[in-house]
Image (cartoon, rainbow, N blue to C red; front, side, top):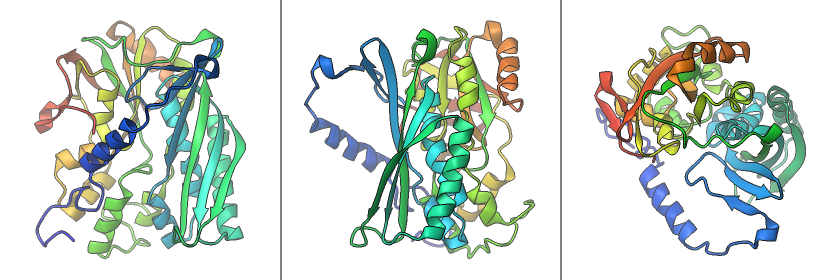
Length: 350
């Protein structure tokens, strides 16, 4: 527990991203086997949002993710459709960040006991998600493991493809002078909930009540499902003026570094974050630096585009379903991500 008067951090809540990175490096160091070429060829995209595999003449993208501890908030509120939709959103948005069109999803549910009413709610949410992403549910795995988990854990794996000869969007074509556009999120999505729940607990927040400036129960506001950005990415990914795509999920704005480590992403026109984020920051006395590397701060998806075609690209994004797109920055020579007005700089992706 953080001492009275001390600011919270994600690490203090139990999620230390530096330790996680070291553990992941240790895991990958032990994986040395490489499959033979006739089983598919891995397309190198280190640190990116999805893995790429070349099979014959086709390239597929594969990604996997979980809803995380947001399910504990769903359990507390007795609402399951939102996190069912999150199973889809957290995965297909990573495919979108590669320019891949989502084709299918398989879900994974670990639980201590299967509750038909809970599963029905999750199913309705998954249905909403795959409808929005226009992909198929192929099935999945439900494991009843009371000795391993208490409650329920939700995740999935998604597969995407590149239609009509479209190449993956890796960020390799990003160059100084490019502009960065952002599509607003629907709240906090499904990231940072280990920290959020600590803040709610410490401040004894009434989830049925509204926060200052809010218009409804804060529990419902936090539970709002991940916005799905696949239609926008699908409409723009094949265009030469689109140089990079990023899902601003865990890691916040630092996700931009995954696109190109040898340019600087300068976020000098970031819009005022919705009041929910300021409220969370106040609850835990979080630094602004911590906020921008833990939460999406109101922007859930970013596009790096040529400045020459900026106006037309914005119109295309609006027609594809995101008329709320805003300009959030530009690309310069250098490295890392910065928010100059706030005096914040991140040197890499955590």
